[in-house]
Amino acid sequence: MALAPAHDTTSADAAERGHDEHVDAPDLRIFVFALFFTFGGITSLNDIIIPKLQELFTLNHATAMLVQSAFFLAYALFSLPAAAIVRRLGYMRTASVGLLVMTVGCLLFIPASSSAMFGMFLLALFVLGAGITIVQVVANPLISLLGKPKTASSRLTFAQAFNSLGTTIFPRVGSTLILGGLAGVSAASLSGAALDDYRVAASRVIVHTYLGLAVALLIIAGVVWTRRNRLQEKQIAGVGMFHPLTLLSRPRFSAGAACIFLYVGAEVAIGSMIVNYLSQSTVWAVDRQTAGDYVALYWAGALIGRFVGALALQFFSPGKVLAGVATGAIALVLLSANTDGVVAGWALLAIGLMNAIMFPTIFTLASEGLGARASEGSGVIATAIVGGAVIPPLTGYVSDVSHSLAFALIVPAACYAVILAYGLYARKPVA
Image (tube, rainbow, N blue to C red; front, side, top):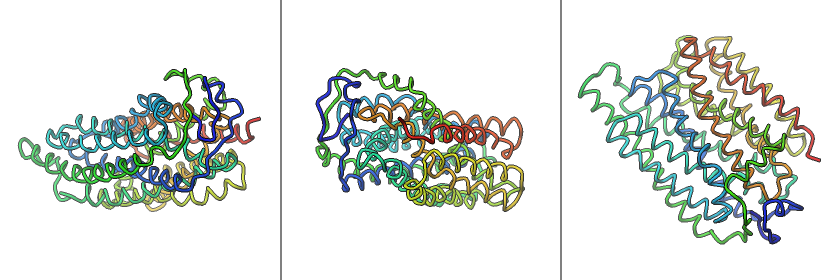
């Protein structure tokens, strides 16, 4: 995929040679910022749904984390097809497709509520994740191409700040709507028909939230469709769906993709356990709705960090900055795991600040030098986001086996250690 002005290409290799073009389109940057805000906010709602479904269906930690597995499994299955759709339809049309799939996922919460079955909620989340996968495969390379290559890392970090703005706002609203409803009733105290009625009534609160999102997504999809011809794009012919996997032969790219897997997994695992972690008597001993309100602060840390990081990355080596924040994340994880009370809770929430620049920095470090194969690289890297489906259940399993949420933090700590090593490895630009 190349953007105007573009050369005619007949193969991915030909397109890759000498490609350093970019488009200076401020209006499209605003559009991409809106996409980051939308899919970031919807993704963060999983952290609110997990404790609600865990209470409704009396699930252990590992099973409750299947919410993240169902959602992020979509990245493994749809990222490469999404990259192929981008090559066929272009960025703007593909974004419309992704938004429509997200709408379908939101609407599937209606039959999920009617059945009051955990599996149906997982199906709705899977479809919703598929739509977000398509949109993210579009957004990441597009924001990199909408400006000068040398500032791509800073620009993507700034765009990710809007992702964090969504993840800051949505959990607070979701906590009030989802965790606040029927807060005085517990599924553990009910049985038989009363339990079934409670599950249906409580899940309807979730449905109302996602129905509102479905309406908003339809409107956004319509606006994006009106801009479908905004970019003049040259298609790359003769490229199979799995051709992007050839990029894994590049050590810097493949290591970066692995780090995306670990970063997303660690970030999602920590975000998913915040409500249960803060609710513990040894930490803050607060109710779940109050703990749910603090999820927004975890993502707010990423919001602040990305605005600061966008500026810092204009002056410092992205690799060194990545290594620095990974070191900070490890220190905060260890501090939280080995303390109690106020310190343990705030240390866990502060990890969001360290997470801030990790995704955009890893993405740009791994994608450096890909040229016209940027959309292919985005497809592969988006596949690696499936780490959000693997690391959280693993963290939940360690928690269940050890009977300690604090001990389970060893899993994300190990992820951050690998990211630290990658930052040091990729601190020098590609020759």
